[in-house]
Structure formats: C-alpha cells, structure tokens
Image (cartoon, rainbow, N blue to C red; front, side):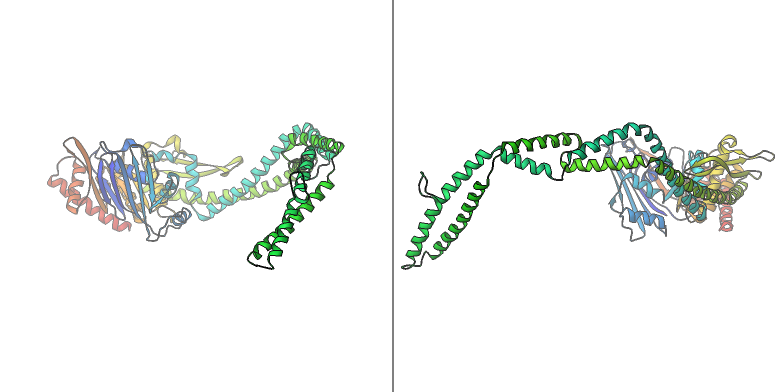
Length: 566
C-alpha cells in the first residue's frame, strides 16, 4: 500500500507531500490544477519515462519519493532478495531524481538500482489505469496474460506446455541446421579428409617444435659455444697466457690460510669460505669440460632439423601457432568427419526425438486448452456480472479459445474477447463493436474481478476512468470502484460527484499563483470540506443551501452503499 508520496520541483509541484490511506483515495480539483501531474510523479516512481523537461522552471533538479507499506507480497519480497535490497521493516522507500544535465538516480531502500529493475518492482506495487489502458484490452498479449494468470492450475499448465514447446523447437532448429549443412557436406568432407591426411603424414609429436627450435639454435651457434666453453675452462683450471687459473689461485689461497691457522685462527671462517668456493668452482670446471668434450657439430644434422621445421612451420601457418594447436585442430577435423559420416544416423535420431517431443507437446497443449476453456468460462461469467452491475444489463461477454493449425509459444489455440452490448446481437470481437465508453466499463469490470485475487497488486490507480459517462452509469461505476477498494487501495482522479462521495480519503488539488510563479497544493479535506467540494462538483457553481443538502445526501447514501458492499 502507498503511504506517502513526496514531490520536489516536478512541473507545477514545487514541494508536495501527500499521505494516502487504505480503501478509496479520491483526488479532485479544477481542470489543469495538476491532478495528472501527481499521477505522473507516481508513474516515475514505478519506472515510467522521466526527462529533464519535467523539472520545474527555475530549478536544477526534480525528485520523487514514495513510501510503501508491504503486506505478505511473496513475489515482491523474492524479487527484492534477488536484487539484494534489504526490506526488514516491512517498508519500501523508493527515490528517483533527475537533474537538468540529465543525470539520474534511483534508490530503493538506499540501494542503487537500474530503471529496468525499478520497473519490475513497480509492476508489483501499483497498477495505473489511465484512459489509454482501455485500448490495452484489445491487445492479444494482454488477453492471454489476463486469462493465463487466472488460476494456478492454468499457469502451471502453460509453464509445462512452454517447456515442451521450447524443447521441440530446439530439436527442430537442430534438424534444420543439419539439413542446411548437408548441402555443403560433399565439398566439406573432401577438405577435412585432406587436412587430416596432411597432419597425419607429418607425424607430429606434442612439444616437438620447441625441442627442434632449441636444438637448431644450438647447432647454428656451435662455434661460438665451443669458444665460450674453451675460454671458460682455461680461466678456471689451467695456467694461460693471461696468468694463473682461478682454481690454481684458490688452491694457493686455501693452502696459505691453512698454514696461517697454525699460528692464528682469526681467519678460520675465511678459510672455510675459500674451501667451499674451491669445491664449487671445481665442479663447475668439470661440467664445462665434459660439455665441451661431448659437443658434436654436424651440418647434416642441422640441415635435417631445419627441413623438419619447415614442415612444422607450414602446418603451424595453416592450423595453429604451435604443434599442440595443430594436433588439436586435427582432433576437431576427425570429430567433424565422424559427425558427417554419421549424418543419416543423426538425422534419424533427431527426427525420432522430434516426433516424441511433438507428441508430448500435443498432450500438454490439449491440457492447456482444456484449462483455458474452463478458466475462460468462469472469468467470462464474472466479467459479465460486473458489466450488468455497471449499467449494461443486456451485455454479453465471452472469452473464446479456438484451435490453431500449428503451435506457438502461447499454445495451440487463439484467444478472442467477444462482446455484445444489446439484446439480439451476436457477440463479436471486442475491437470491432465496443465503443470508448463500453471499453472503459469493460476495463473496470476486469479490474473489479481481478482485485479479489491474491495475485493482484496492492494499489490501483484510476486516472479519469469516468470520462464520457454520467447519471446512473456514473453511480454504477462509483459502486464498482468502491467494491475494488474493498480489496485494494485505490487512487482515483474524478470529476464526478457520484464517485467522489464514495471516498475514504478525499484529496483536493488546487493551483495557486503568486507573482510570476504558479504552484500546486494538495489538501486532505475534512468532512465539511468534502461536502462543499462535492456540492461544487455537482452544481458547477458556488455552493448553495440546496446543493449542500444534496451533497450531504449523496455522502450519506455512499456510506450506506459502502456498508452493504463490505
């Protein structure tokens, strides 16, 4: 339920805070006072479009904030949990702000959310029914939505059918893809076999290219390596023309320190270090010597390796950066060859699976159609009953499901809303026979029926649903709106006193001009103020004693009517 709506700098609304109550909240005021602007600001909280053009003249930003009191609302709480939005106090605070620079912000209980997420949340909080919403009844998607959400059994049947439809569709798509690809298979299979043969004949081994490149690098620089080895060994282990070798020098130092230790042990640690160094360098010298003696340079071996690398380079250029990549490509080639060679078998298997999936889908489609027809009968009767109460005693309304030739994601039947307003006339599609006023009452009848259901949103808004009606019809519409308010919080903008007198909370929207500025104010009327406003609405002029008496009588009658409804 919507508790408060606070608006800053939204068109004529400079700073307005409105408190709403349970039941029927009526909003009245002169044309152009800003009633629809208030509803637009609520729409912004629910995720509707909001632009910088809506910012009040002379201001740099606008902000709208709404506080909702949550009841059970399991689906909404699950959505909030999915969006990681805390909701521990059974209260939801939504804030939306936009600046002239176009920067916007959306907060839900202090958490930033996207506009898409806000729309998902808003759809579970408030249902706004404006004049354009009457036309939504004629949209096929909305007709399916209305019926398919009518019972839990029907919603389950639809979900079950859609699961089988998706599985069937996926298998059909796979079959079509294979059939399309089969036209290219003859040419493709020759190429794949040639690639497999080329890689197979090369006899590649994993990591072979890295080993060959290392050996080629060594053989290509054999002379330099040999010279480095010879020079290094001579410096370590022999007297050279440059002087004494490193090992000989260390040996002499080691002996000197050993002889010295007989007289002074101060350099004992240095002696051990030199001794360890001598041992380590001696091992290095032996390793260098052995490496030099084992070196063999073979131009024939180098030519052979380079020839092998030429083969590998060519394959790597075609199939991958390394030998491993080439071998993996070969595996993919062989897998594709196996699939092509098993084409007929795969096609038979797919066709068999499609047949099984279609049989299961037909069963579920039949169950869905049966559930729809049962729900359509109940829903049609309830809507027709509401239409009779709305001043259309001869109206006939029927939701009809007719078989389709094929299957769609919605099922195997076509929905149509059929309507007749007068005795003796056959029902025909709603879009062809219903006038604007009739559509308005049908929409209200649908809302009245839906309001009793647990799945309905907790708050409903009727924005001038009374356009084009009056007299007895206006009284009937007022009673239906009051009936909806038994189950849901209702916000209703109206110009009709018959509807206004049904209010549980009556809000008056007034526009005032001061100097060069104009602002809209919202006042909650007392009982006396309500009487005066209803008298004004009924008489269209300043209240007289007679119009006031009439207004009191209307309010008294409304209280009696609401008492019966409840």
